[in-house]
Length: 617
Ligand code: ADP
Ligand code: ZN
Image (cartoon, rainbow, N blue to C red; front, side, top):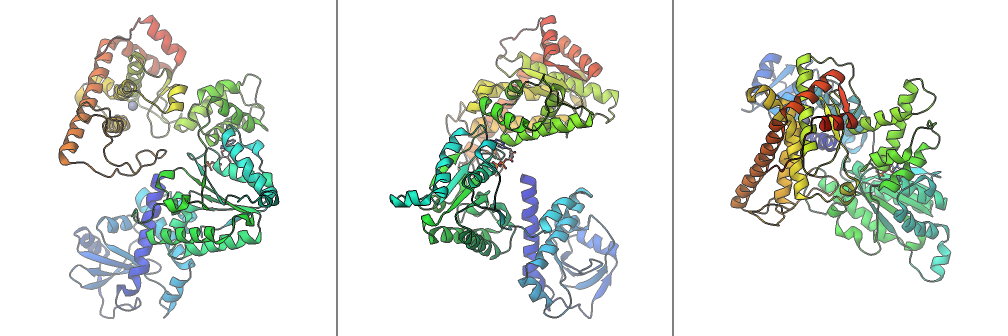
């Protein structure tokens, strides 16, 4: 998500640069310079590397480019097909533009029609992605090139409250909205004002879209939808006119539901200056507010918006007569998960041994979308295995897949690497098991999946997941567990032989430690203060840099405290593993041998070895 956004932001910036720069770029509307010198491609690349090139204007087919050097000289180059060129240019801060078609006036026409910049954007973006990742990425570019922010209309969603499970509170609140839509007269007769806007707040995948569709379905009214994030990709003025369109169409089809997904993308606090498409966003937001104020509540249009970042929304959106109702849609608890599994098990053939109750217990923190995905993955696995029913095995495999990506079973690992990963994972598992208060190990595996060489799964406690409350002791243990992998490598192979494999672990440790000090007030020296206004939302975590609101001295103390915490965790992990070296060896042997060790086998090992949870530290 984050990455995609960055890319889009960049793409949008590039195009903005093109739109703004290109006409004025070479004095005339892209006329080739008659006196142009010509440069060899290799010389050109060299000059870019030496930062001697300030601008590049690519020909429409990108076969040639006109360039301006930093000393103002111009030249022409024949370009070689080079997928790294764009990256090179951006790395060296070269202004890049693509020449519009040569016909006089075509530029102005193109600029005023949306299609041109969008296509251009697609092309450029594609090139850029290619340059970055060497292939792939085409998909995103294609997506991007398509004209977005279309209003979608479903005359009948065919969705009912029966399709949404585990969010009873939200359903109850929305039942009222259904009543309004069905019988507006009953409410107007007694002088009640019908709400105009309902804001659904909750993490992605919890069923907000589904709920909005169910409201439309239950009331048998059409469903209009549009996503806020799409506006951000648009050009100035387009977002606002789309909003106007949307309301015009809705008025013609009232009573109806307008659903705006990711409203935070347009509805951010105005003037918050997050860069990229600010003007566009503000215009779109203003238009939305105007439209919402422009119709009476009783016209039968109800706007349902969804966000996971209510904290960043412009307060104007929440004023009476706008989104004055908020409905929280949270991650489901155990009972909710069980119901959701029930909904998605419909239409799938599950074997008798499948116990959805157990599945619900194993999946704390999963959203409705995760659960739907899980059962679907399990069904796909069953089909691939030529089974007529989905059994527990497929479900177990699917849980792990949803959590960690598919296993890469056929990837070859050298014996040495296998052993190293085995020690690393054994380190995590053992530290986890020997800490006085930590989650139980569910499975240890050295089968690579996703980006991970191996994985140790812990079962998080339902209570902790649900409450979202973590004690200081727990967080300290978590850091020790995360360091356990690296420490095991050090103990076995010596400090000089440690690998880069622990980089994720180290990042996690650093971020936990920093949050303990700056956000959770768990520092002895600084006390219970929150430092740095966090801009990251509650669901997005540390997405966006915190704003600094403290002194240099405090910053230094924070750094000290953070490194103290990390050092402590490191000492604890080391002590646990040194004291239990024999168990570490045995566990690593088991892993090398059988590749996975499950909870029971691990417990047996611990009992057999008579390890004890010691009073460490
Ligand atoms: P959101 O809009 O909150 O991001 P969606 O409504 O798009 O989430 O959910 C995606 C899919 O996940 C739905 O189409 C549905 O299949 C499943 N899902 C999510 N929440 C639930 C739920 N509470 N009950 C049943 N299915 C759900
Ligand atoms: Zn690790």
